[in-house]
Length: 213
Ligand code: SAH
Image 1 (cartoon, protein in one colour):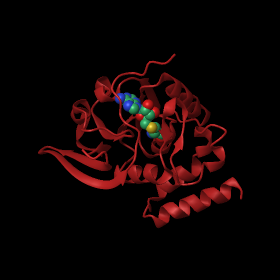
Image 2 (cartoon, helix red, strand yellow):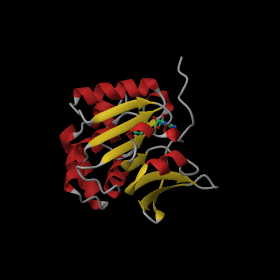
Image 3 (cartoon, protein in one colour):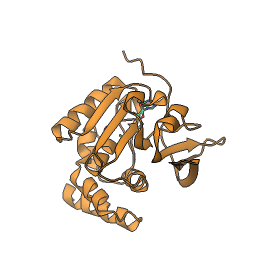
């Protein structure tokens, strides 16, 4: 089976699972996921599963990337903050759907590799920082949308503060029995409203910048 065929199959599977937004499906179709993987995992680029990347981290499952992107309700005016650049795949999907993506990663190695991919793909509206996502990116805030791609026990306070009024945040939250749910938080003038969307499995959100040898 060639790659194009696998890709079409993946897009069809995403449609069947309720992802109907054409711009999102198009972004997925146009983004070569194999570029975000090491050689060993490239043959699995279009199977709908999370896969290992460097530094013991993972690239999210395409369905989860599509689902989170869909539930963010993006438009071209949105300024988006992503916590957990990882491979850069989620940021690459967000890029054509919004005005600007600010993405933070605690591993310099991952951030550098992702930056190379953004350059190769000509994704000029992505700005990166190696830093602790728990602190957010105060001097670029407020953000219209915030997407956290690692699981926390509770919503980091800085991120809640940096979400614009009228903004939306999606974050995987872990409960006391270690299960995780994607939670969507909508900020209005009255405060924050929470909705539980989907059970998921993400790597943990870890405090501080990673020490690398
Ligand atoms: N969005 C990524 C998924 C990466 S997995 C992709 O599409 O490939 C989650 C990432 O979050 C990991 O790379 C991990 O190092 C990073 N991470 C975990 N805690 C963090 C923190 N406090 N600040 C920034 N990045 C963090």
